[in-house]
Amino acid sequence: MQVYLNGEYPELTEACVSVEDRGFLFADGIYEVVRCYAGRFFELDRHLARLERSAREIRLGLPLSRDELRLVAQELLRRTGLLDCSLYLQATRGVAPRNHAFPVGVTPTLFAMLQPAPSPDPALAERGGAAVTVPDERWGRCDIKAVGLLPNILAKQKAVEAGAQEAIFIRDGLVTEGSASNVFAVLDGVLWTHPQDRRILGGITREVTLELAREQGVPVREEAITQNMLWQAQELFCTGTVAEFLPVVRLDGQPVGDGRPGPVCRRLAAAFAARHG
Ligand SMILES: Cc1ncc(COP(=O)(O)O)c(C=O)c1O
Image 1 (cartoon, rainbow, N blue to C red):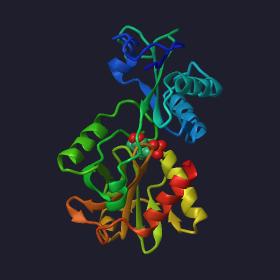
Image 2: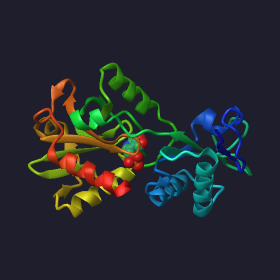
Image 3: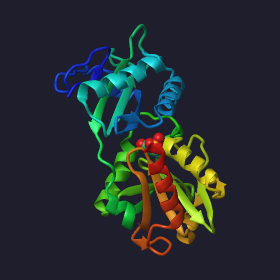
């Protein structure tokens, strides 16, 4: 399978990055993941805008413009023949002798690949899944989609070892987000989710979910969910590019609401599926 690396389209097995790449040595880079449904990228422009924002925030000059990135994405589709897949895009500060300060005159590394992405397990959408809560021990700029994901990896592994699908971060008694998703709760018909600030990644699926909720007349409060509210919520669900909609019906081994996916989540998931066709 061909991938994109610094202006070329090598086979995945041939694509090489130096061990001096700052992505490898420092996790000095950013990334994006975009879903492609039936050969069409979902919200590609919003993802590319977020990539540009992440790059700006870490003071990294992307080597390609938004239009050029769009062409790379289309070219990967053409070369791989994939239809239902996800696009992974990563930019790092490039290759240089190891030294914390920015290297001078170095071109960033840009990598992109497609991976087959079957839709999430329909049984999980139907019956719901489980999550565990974990302390949010990440840095103060979770709004940047940075490649350094060690706390997210450790959190997700805790979920896996508990037989759950997602880990939900708690900071100062408040729900921030999931290890790779945003978190929503429904209390008395109102949809709550953490406001978009530096404590969470501004999820594209989160944005679309809020738009769909407003279209459907669901009252929305972009305010943090307290840990206590988790136990009073009628519904809890996570959204993300890969997970799409995960209804959370068990949290830390206890049932959420009546232990089944709730009507708000079901309605929004159906509207989301209709949006991406
Ligand atoms: C920490 C975190 N929060 C939220 C999300 C959801 O973002 P999006 O809907 O753009 O995929 C992700 C996606 O990977 C994530 O890693």
